[in-house]
Image (tube, rainbow, N blue to C red):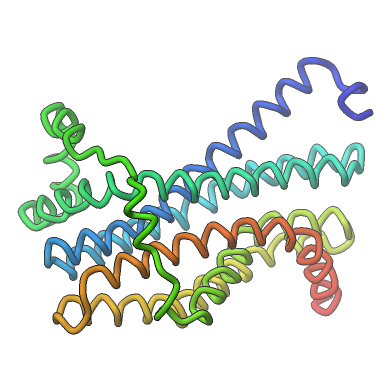
Length: 280
């Protein structure tokens, strides 16, 4: 009914806005998924410290991109306030969450290529000595053309080597739930602001707390496990295949986490509303 009441121009603008947000979300989650490739490249090149520096830079850029995405998504809520069409807004948010899942899957498909590319970037980083100089060195036509030689397509053998045995199930579940919370945080807060307009500001500001909490939990419970295994591989205490398996199952659990976000959207919004009441 809402779409019928709108003019064609309004519908087109709304569709373009959702498409932009969805593409933005897809890119963010692809980048975050591909950040795992940096660790693998660090192990293969033996330049772990440099790879961790590059890894942290990529993660920070992805986190910053979320702050850019938030105002775009908030504009959907502003449009929904006019009609109070919660069903339409929920559908829009689920499309955005779906793009997060697609982004994670896309990142998994690109993993072999980016492991090879990041291995080369790490070596270039060592020569350049700084990120600005690195960008100047690799941003040339010659390097871009040479990047084609590093394209790798996923093979079935890669999937067949993934084993869940020996990897703590608690780690996978923790990674899944943290990803779900992190993925749905901003959307749930915005949805809550429409459910309870009287607590709009409190609900919207809670998104920063939710994402910050998810990031802290990730640093406390997931990253140390991966770092420990990485060090053991570098010291020869574990075979290289173990870190490949770890990264593989973490990427899978991360993708499942984006699917879990679909289930968390509405319940999380109601929880935020209740918490907002406590602060007012």
